Image 1 (cartoon, rainbow, N blue to C red):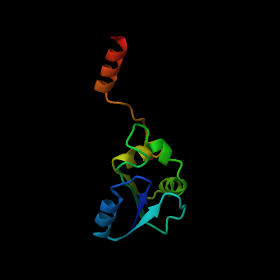
Image 2 (cartoon, rainbow, N blue to C red):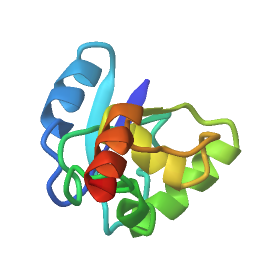
Image 3 (cartoon, rainbow, N blue to C red):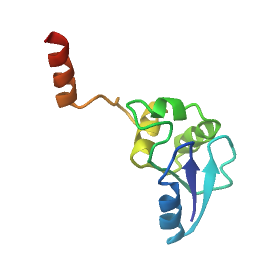
Image 4 (cartoon, rainbow, N blue to C red):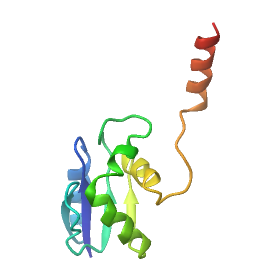
Length: 116
């Protein structure tokens, strides 16, 4: 099996994902600006701090050229794994249902500060 590990600007866990994938098969880095998936059988969208580690960080990464190919790959039944920030990217790309929200306790503190 050949794995493609997506690398975005600021991603820091791509090397870990690459090394883990290489333990069970072939693996290579897929650059965010390249649409070519190089014939991979599975894709890993790692975490770290791609485009910053903020809520909706995946909204920026979703528009990277490689994501067009990842979305098509997933819709054709190809396996895609999102780890950490990669999960956010997959949500923003419409590959996972739902939306990401701030923690309830963070929302409560913010509203308390605003009402004080």
